[in-house]
Amino acid sequence: VDQSGKMSVPVAYQGNTSAAVADWLNKGDNAWQLTASTLVGLMSVPGMVVLYGGVVKKKWAVNSAFMALYAFAAVWICWVVWAYNMSFGEELLPFWGKAGPALDQAFLVGRASLPATAHYRADGTLETAMVEPYFPMATVVYFQCVFAAITLILVAGSLLGRMSFLAWMLFVPLWLTFSYTVGAFSVWGGGFLFHWGVIDYCGGYVIHIPAGVAGFTAAYWVGPRTKKDRESFPPNNILFALTGAGLLWMGWAGFNGGGPYAANVDSSMAILNTNICTAASLIVWTCLDAVFFKKPSVVGAVQAVITGLVCITPGAGVVQGWAALVMGVLAGSVPWYTMMVLHKRSKLLQRVDDTLGVIHTHGVAGLLGGVLTGLFAEPNLCNLFLPVTNSRGAFYGGNGGAQLGKQIAGALFVIGWNVVVTSIICVVIRLVVPLRMSEEKLAIGDDAVHGEEAYALWGDGEHYDDTKHGAAVVPVTPSVPK
Image 1 (cartoon, rainbow, N blue to C red):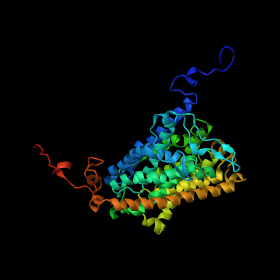
Image 2 (image 1 turned 180 degrees about the vertical axis):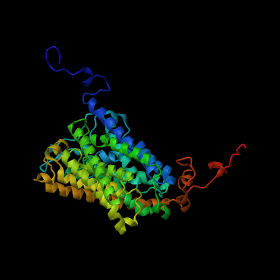
Image 3 (image 1 turned 45 degrees about the horizontal axis):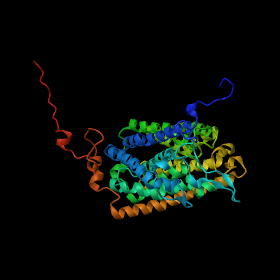
Image 4 (image 1 turned 120 degrees about the vertical axis):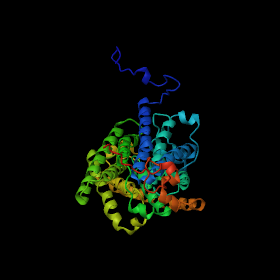
């Protein structure tokens, strides 16, 4: 407040203070969005790299971690060269944007906008204006890129321990181009599901259901691990897995907190709900393990963290805290049942070797979250975020029943597209390079595939090479003076 009693804004927070501070730039929103983007990036590197490196058998630690690291780098290049605009640019088809680079200075420093997101009523009048955050386009490109990258890394979780690395190098750009961009544009970028009113606050339908379904589908085409690996696949470093899970949990503040493209009240609600749901999921899963298997599993707790995070994501900013708690209870029990009970009884699920159970932790949990969002989406919170006004979950009556139907139909589209497109991609890759490693490499693991090992120890699956591992030493009993 100045001497006259009027509110005054410090110069540093006003627009046009320099050539780099436009009058539309909100420094707080921009700072938060860059921070949120970096938190999501940390979920992948080092989060998922460390988690994958620790949760698999020792002979696959390097290969698994490297699949995640490669995917993160490859997505970046594809994203800025053509995939960003396919996901968030001008409409080409109702489910796809026009391909084009996001590299030009004039494009990146201008105000962010998603051109296909202007939403109109049935009579043609504007209902909700085009999405235009108060920060530059470069920030949106960054934020959305780390989402795309972690999706490919999640798909890799189904394929660890046998997919050819060369095949994976081809799979990443192909799946990003022909699957991820379709889901992103359809649900977020202004495609038909966006305008129809399907609710996906921050990635249940764009990231988690596609990752679970695509991973499971690709696992079918690649084939299973070796019989020995399927029967015995102990984590080589549970503490590493816990570290990765912790980075996921804390990084999810950027994941769901960045959804509104602003540091606003909806962002705060989303972060709080995320933690409520995840904590409840972990507690319920651990209790179920203790009751039915007599031992609370740490790896099970890691899975529960993931299912909780995934389940809340479609509705993080549009459900109340009590609903987040209910979603957490279900996130810790429904995927637990499908993974620990149903999977062992189902011939179909047994036939496909989904290494880390991504179909359960992301596919089932993402679908569960999407349906529960259709039940619990609160009308006032919906109006803070959604382009379709007066949206609500079935719990709140009115048109809520229709919303639940939209959630189910949207999920079916995403599932169907990913089954078909992922299958085509795998068949095409198979015509060029083998999808699987050779039997020799499958028997040996990292040492054969990369010539590198996770630990300086000789162990499961490696060739014993005394020039590399050291000659065997015969212990000698020291002489004892008489």
